[in-house]
Every structure is written in C-alpha cells, then in structure tokens.
Image (cartoon, rainbow, N blue to C red; front, side):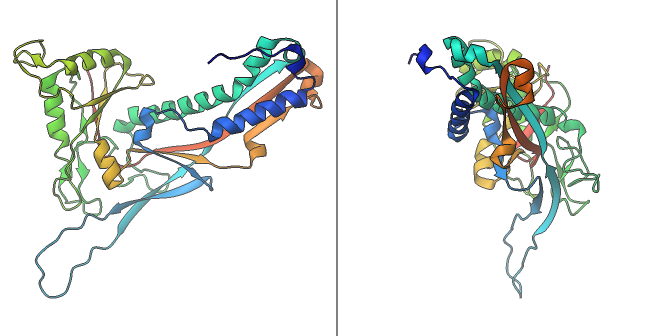
Length: 332
C-alpha cells in the first residue's frame, strides 16, 4: 500500500489543523493492537493508581488421607509494591514546513506511530534491565522489606519451596557456571535442572521449558543447531544421531539484551496455566490532557521559534514477579 503525498490544498493552514490530525492518529495508534513481542511472556496491564501492591501467595494444595476433620490451607501471602514513573517523548516541526512541504507533513503524521514503537521499546529495555540485574537483586525487596519474598535474589540457586518456612526444601532458577547455549549437552543439563523447580509442598512443580530467550550473537547459531535433524554424538556436529531438541524450542531473539552470551529458559505453558508471570509491566492511566501535550501558535514556544510540538507522557512501573517459570544461565 502506497503512502500518498498531500497536495498543497490538503496541507494544514494553521497549527490547530496539524495538531488535530496528529491527535486523531495518536488515539487510533493507541487503540490498535500492539505487534507481538517477547515481553508478552509476562503480564502487562493498565492501572488506575500510581502504586500497586502485588501479592505473592503460597497456595499449592496437596491432598492427604482424611483423618478426622478436613484440612485447610491458609492463603499465606507476601507482597511487594510497584510504583510508576513518568517518561516522555515528543516531536516538533516548523509550521512553515508543515504548511508548504508534503514530505514534512507526512513525516509529522508518522509521529504517533513512532511514539507507540518507542513506547514498546521502552517496555522491553526496562524489562531487560530488570532481568540482567535479577541475579543480584533480592526477589520482591522494598524499602520496608529488604529480605523480599524468600530472602534471596530473583535468580538464585536457593529459593525456598515455602517462603514462610526457612527450613523448607530449596530449588534453583539460576546457573552461574558459564554454559554456551549453542550446545545440546548444555541445553539438556539446564532443562533437566529447571524441571526440578518445586512447589510450596516440596513437590516438583512440573516445569518443562519450551522457550529460549537469547541475545543477538546466539540467535542464528542456536536456530541453526536446533534445525538440524542429525548431529554428532557430542551434540555439536551435523550428522550421527537424532537431534533430541529438533522443533522443541521457540527461540526468541531479544535485541535489547546487553550481554552477548547469557540466556534464559522459559516455560510458556506454565505461565498460561498457573499464572506465574516472570515480570510485570504496569501502565498508569491518566487524563488525556496529561498524556498528550501540545504547543500551538498561541504558545511562547511557537512565538520564539516558529515551531509547533507534541509530547507524549507515559507512566510505567516494572517488576520481576515469579521466578518459577524462568531460568537464567550465564553464557559463554
């Protein structure tokens, strides 16, 4: 589909016309479905408060033989707060250009779509910052609760199966010994380790990872490895034995990763069935006049520069949530 240019009669004569069309396109772009992203593996939702308390519950029931009265499990909860912060991005243009140049006006009207793209990238980059710091950040920690949920980092080899019982069995979602993702042997070892994740009763939760998040440098090599039907006995060649992981994993490229080697295993099925998102993104809903701000011909900015401008302000909060369905592996 071509993108038509405007004739001189269709170009805006006043700043209000240019801003009105910009606003209409902004509203349409906000209402449109966002393109798929790796961040969709977590939860993203709008909120009506700048701070939300998010509960973490111990609530895995276990049937036992009835002896006398029925047994009940209390809904033991801990929680952490997620606060939003304000972010902004904007565009400006000379009014003379918008009213006389077709390409300038077309570029101006691409601003809303570019704002939505920038917002999606902001979410991704913010989540990457959390993930890459997860091995050194206490899970659910806050100013008033430095020990967080179970006293260890989000990525840890010693999570408590029952965070209310310091003597309960531990499990791991972190491999600190460097292991290259482009290796069948390493994949097998890390998948097996992740399958050992426990519920609050100390029983295996049933984790079975099906997704791998990788940085740019590992994306094509891993896809090539997993696409092979046959390979050498050591799992690194191209012929010999059947590739046990052919077609098993959804390999997702995360271009925002800053580390060229670290990788993450995710069980997307568990996320859907058990409601255990590894991260949370919150967008605070504000009055439209606060979200989209404009400077037209009546503004001092226009009088000093001859330009008009529009700024988009968004309020976001991010947090790592549940560690059960994700595992970080230090790469090599």
